[in-house]
Length: 343
Ligand SMILES: *Cc1c(COP(=O)(O)O)cnc(C)c1O
Image (cartoon, rainbow, N blue to C red; front, side, top):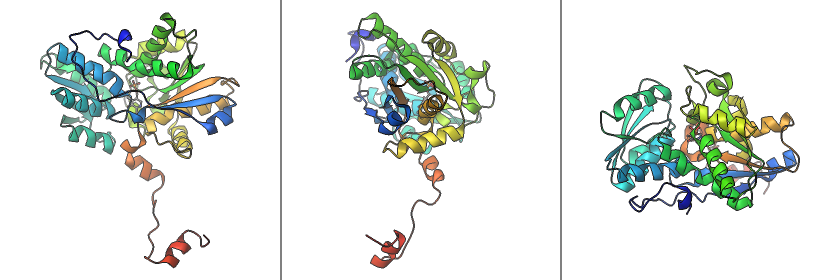
């Protein structure tokens, strides 16, 4: 659909799982809170449940075009799910390196079902990415992490969709920052749209890292990143320089949100019927933080990116409410008693 903005040629194999075109949902609660118009870009509606599909489709298609047979990535989970799906679709093999013990259950299940070779290393995401960089070339495999430029190219489409849906760019974009590819891709997309005359202004880019993994906020790598939001549990963001440029050029910034902030945001959007994974909720946590500090102008248009689907991480969902179901006898009275009597 956005082919003119993408490096696709007649030699690029056609590959798609109908990614993109995700909902832009008005949040009445957040709009009311901030006296602004606040939308949630729900990337959990992509084929494998995260925005990674937007760039992965292009990275895998280009790998195939260039004759590769195996793609490889390091992943906190969603990149591996996406790489596995698109490799399967393209008739290629996917090898994924994950940090042992730190990938949400749904993501692991996806990589497994799509038939990837899954290798769990005793180390974190940054270690896994270093191993991928070491082995890819000698082993003749194409890296499909966001250091592959086609990933960022493809991920621009989310920025295009937002501008097309609103008829202009939002005033501010709130986005989680992990390896920092996505914020860089959005910024690239907004600038490309500006250059093409499709929009007349670009948004302030507001990125949010987890406080225990806030390398860009502190200006130095974090050797032992920690957060329950495993998608952004990254201590050495590969696209950090691009992300800081996006923040600076757009007069935005990159800030930290605590795990408690993220948990609060996770629950807040769920109460409006929207289920996103913890890493995604960092954007809304950041938005709430900036509303409190008065940094969101009244009447402005805001988009918070919800990067992945809440169903991917059922363990976190269940841990927030330890005992979701009350078990009762199979009788009318017992059920009525349990719900407090009256109908
Ligand atoms: C990958 C991912 C992120 C982080 O995106 P980066 O491009 O690495 O900054 C955030 N949330 C989810 C759900 C992700 O899958």
